Amino acid sequence: MKTLNDFWKEIGILRSAQSLHYWDLETQMPPMGGAWRGDVLGYFAGKVHSVLTDDQYFNLLKSQSHDENAKIALKDATKYRLLPQSFVEDMTRAQTESQISWEKAKKQKDYNLFKPHLKKMIEMKKKYAEYINPNLNSYDLLLDEFSPNLDQKDIDAVFSPMKEKLISLVKSYQPRHPKTWEVSIETQQKVCQKMIDWMGVNKEQFVLLKSTHPFTLTVHPTDVRLTTRYNEKEPLGSILATIHELGHALYEAGLPAEQFGSPASEANGYDLHESQSRLWEVCFGHSKEFFDFLYQSFKEVDENSVKGLTAHDIYLMATEVTPSMIRVDADPVTYGLHIMIRYEIEKKIFNENLSVDDLPRVWNQYYHDYLGIDPQDDAEGILQDSHWSAGSFGYFPSYLLGSMMAAQMYATLQKKNPKLHANILKGEMKTTIEWLQKEFHQHGRIKSSPQMIKDATGEPLHEKYWIDLLKNRFIEKNG
Ligand SMILES: [Zn+2]
Image (tube, rainbow, N blue to C red):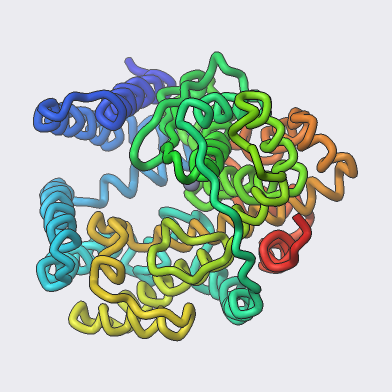
């Protein structure tokens, strides 16, 4: 007779195998391996699904619903069991077709190629929400999968007051015309390794490689892998991507390992996950002390790499604000507006049945109104992100919510530790990591993230901290 822990261990092992195959696919797999790897990943996904919907597992969870971990796992299992197998298969097929059509449409800059697939994804996601809970607003249900315990009411409460403030911050920015900077990839790689030391990360637990799109992946809390990207003309890109991903990695490594495969050892939402990366990338990584430290690090690796530059020059490069079309390239100030545009559109799709025919027009209008710019074609407009092609509606707000959480955590850390900034320069980040571990990482999914924020910072999520940080770092010249 299998116990609950046996089931969790099995889920953990299957997920580790999935992760490892995926890691290899993204970093080392030869191109011809793709088709077979698709079969391998599909097999493991099916296996995980069959354990999660197993009758014996379900009954065990029901019998132990006094336990918080089992209670959350029961909620997950109930959800999986509500979806008919045929629907899950249709959805997987539709997602694959939709992603292929999106790639083609983006290449050809032609939204019409993608439109029928997008329509299907929206219909399927509405159906999905109905299977799970027909009494709940479908967009609220989708949002909860990425930002648990937050609905449109909560998000509107923080996004609405922030919108005008962001628009006015962007308008008040004075161009700084920073210098340009080129550094060999070899030097960048060495400095990225120094960032691992700076953050006080245990090197035995992590590996850093390169990929086109930086990401973090967990095999187990003791085995976390991350990547960054290198470009000789943008040395700051590799550094900031590395510390962003290290923030994600620290969270994954800080999760309890004992019940791996169960909610107690899972990260709590995309919003909280993003808060961990933005805390390091934007809050610590855009401070004056960090640029002093970074300047020093480059100098130590290769004296010539910073020739003719000061730490302040690097700060000016890192804090340029320019409204631009592409979200992933956006600076932290304009970034929030890219997210709000997507959030407004998703609300219209799910609450007002906005037609796919009208989407590009609505998209372009928002860019004009919020950022004062107009997309030249669909590729730099509505086709730029892959999220909708995968059916990931409700994902985008988590990016901005994460940044806001990060700024609020940072304000608390500053209050608690007057030497925080001096410690950034010295690379003494141990107390910060311990605090994150205690307040956030160790809880897995057992404690809700709004509750963690409230307990750790003394108040519910508020937009003022993110706005103040942006003003301080990007608008006023205090680097
Ligand atoms: Zn991230």
